[in-house]
Image (cartoon, rainbow, N blue to C red; front, side):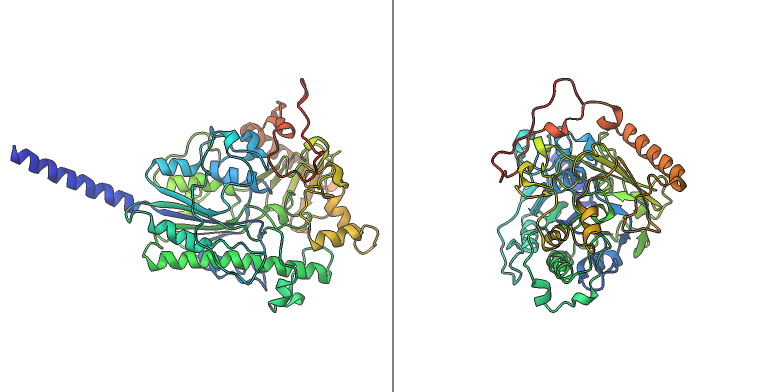
Length: 505
């Protein structure tokens, strides 16, 4: 009897030791995501002004991706794709901002939690929208940590001490329990503190003005204010890294630093051009990445992170996840089929009559960007008048800013009119841009006979991918995004979403 009891005790202790070892060997995950930051605006990616030591360190000690793209250039849909590992056209209501994320779509956070991970977030997780209509009661990013506050000289920045809240999360997590934490800042989302960049001493003459904006002191100052908010985000990343370093968890933590989509400027955010879709992405994980300090040319979407996190944790991604894991890239193995990224838009802020969106799909390769606009008769930036906008502003898909105001006021100024046309005018059904000769994607080549074969090839590649991943629009099926409920703030009291027609796609 006593012998059997002793045997049970020894076996139990042995199994417990194995389980503890397995738990501690699984990687932790720290996912750091800014709100509205374009690819170019980090030190490691070549910006001469903005200071991003946190991002730069992760890139230097890990991998820097130079062809990373969001799945949608709008907050909620992009975050839904990241969480689910699926493109937005597979996510029903979640393809729209100010909507919901139906609970039938599995998230990587849920799979990790069920596998024993501690899961939490601070700041902006899945947002904006309402969880309850989708059958959720907890933000899919995890349990929220927000108790720690800070004083910041930047008046427009949140008082959420994101890094301190991450530290609080760690203190409440068992030493042997792996964790998955989402550190999401509200910066650099509008509104900015006007003139904060100039006040800080940043040199406006060093700003690299994107070719889609007029080179004007107002734009340069606006860009500097944007840089200030990026730096606020990066400070939180840097502090979080140092916390992991101090407690000995740094090298077994997958650290990802990225943004949900591009900068909050005209023809960037809420558009399918690079300034709206190409994002910074750096990943550090010494225990899992072979040959660090590499620049990755492969094309990736942010939705690829979900299966990556699961595979890195020894788990099988759910079959519904159509995105592709990055583990072969981590292992420095040859990759196949990573020659393009796919991006989509449905309804952003509902700034057209009846709450209509601007449905479009895009494929980006090293040579071309091709965009298919399903409703070219609609205004891509929202209607010119505020009457049809839930936000009650003209061209309401574009956030109010000094740059937007400058371009709108310059509609009849010969020096600015072309920028107005680029930002606000209607677009044709097909858009094709040469990346090498036209990195700003300004000259549409879709009707140029010299690019007829390129256009045909890009259209075919896009259609093939959309059919394979069951995009309702590509399959000619019902596409109800224009008619899903809108849960955002309606500053225009007369604005409403149309009811769906009975027998119409």
